[in-house]
Length: 243
Image 1 (tube, rainbow, N blue to C red):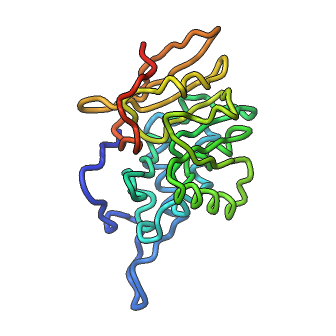
Image 2 (image 1 turned 60 degrees about the horizontal axis):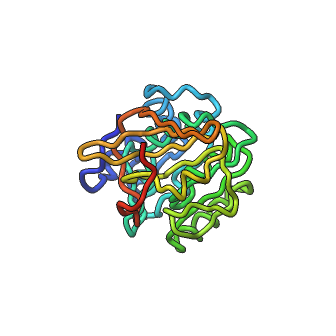
């Protein structure tokens, strides 16, 4: 299990960094780093959905990381995006997505999409993704990067994360791309009948990846695994969905 970030990430920890040149910093074989991520972080940690594994092997994670941090795009740590936003740890994100059992026709909502990496992965697994981001700069970056990669089944929307995106609801999948103290009622209400919502609920010591399902109008919840990941910016302890 990946542990929470406890300090700055050391670029030298990347095993795929090659020798530095006179012109600049070490170069990175991103294809090799991506392969190593899948084989050393994803497969050994109970990720068995081959469609998801293929997506993680195909989507260039480095494209969603600030340029100065691309050399560490594949480390098993959350990567800072600025203003309190982070790119979630690959293993935790993979297990969260897998828990939702994505299907080809699903409509998914990503809450706090950051630069769009989680939305890009889901685009390989579902029909359409609505990617909600509160930071206009990150939303613009996500739109640009997704467009550059030819991903046209993701709509990036700017708005308050705790309100969700009711205009496109209901959603078969809702993914919180970061920890939250609780799931806001306004977001859980946007879950479709038979839908699956996954979030890391922050605890005093360690968070719990929690899966919420809706059947016949009744919500049920179960903890899936322990997960330490940074809190999504802007969340406060407001009226929330409680079991």
